[in-house]
Length: 466
Image: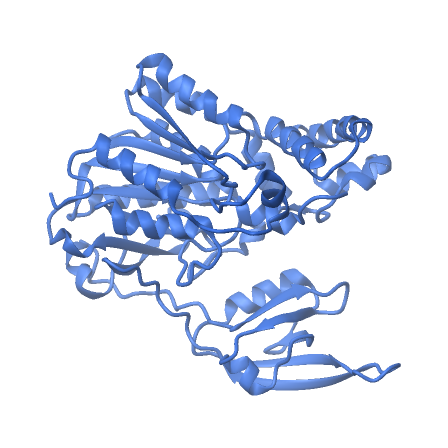
């Protein structure tokens, strides 16, 4: 079926023990840091097919792996004695290796001569720790937070350099669906990473991010098999940590959510509103996840150029598939085994979708974002809804619905900012077709400008020293 690969969809889709000068502001700073830094591999990999390991698709020019002899096109089959031909085993083995560790990789190198097979080789190298994020105009403190579920999670707090040591209004960021890290030393072409850097530098507020269990420096199960409940526990703990900090104005906290986080943000506020003075949802949804998936499949089919008769026929199949998958709480494999006629529709993994296990989406289906927005409105908490004009992942209707719910209780409580020519990942494109094909992306900062302007308008003290 035409359209972007599933991993493209996925990419678009908590008190800290602080180090450095900020540690004195944390009541638990006497405890040692307990998380090791993730490794900088200087390479990217993709699954190469059954029993073929992972193939090296890119090597940084100055990486230790390249210097040791790793080449683009090599198939890695063993890492430090662990068979990694299964992609899940590769992810687990890679995550277990931290900055400063020695790596022994056994690989198969395809011969270039016609009719050749492959040579096996082993290389050894040290992987350095990933460089820490640096945002001009801010100071950063890395810390550790223990989730109520027992996982140690990496926290990252940024403060404006000019803020001094007084209490600041604070932002808690709630991230996306995918297993991408919230810490981005190199934002590259990630529009959400650029937004976070711009908000950290330009809002005048303290910004707290926390890595999900199993992501970045955080420990925990492989994120691809992790639960939504684990992640929500991390965000709740992060909110509790903000309220306990001596450098935070606990009467002025804003929850900022991106993509899926834009729907989790009102849920967190509805269950614990103390001190929350604003909710910002960037590219979230309000409907049930079943409805969301039906909408996204239709948009994907239409934008990929499928003829109308094929679109309607496919949607009948998707209705059956998602009813049993999401409402019946089955895995894709279970549904397709019972309904082999639907196999041609499925474009993702047997047990996973967008890099997350089917159980994760069963949990998402239980959420009630509309009900959460209604509670936010009843509490009199204002909200900013940000949506890109070329966002084909989340619908405009969902954004209008959130604004309408907020304004029903109090006129002006909900504000919609539609960002021209911008997709779900907050990158801009010449036209909708280019956005769907992910061609010609640029970052222009208008989404961040809308967020910062709303914060400064709504909350005195944001953007200047308190």
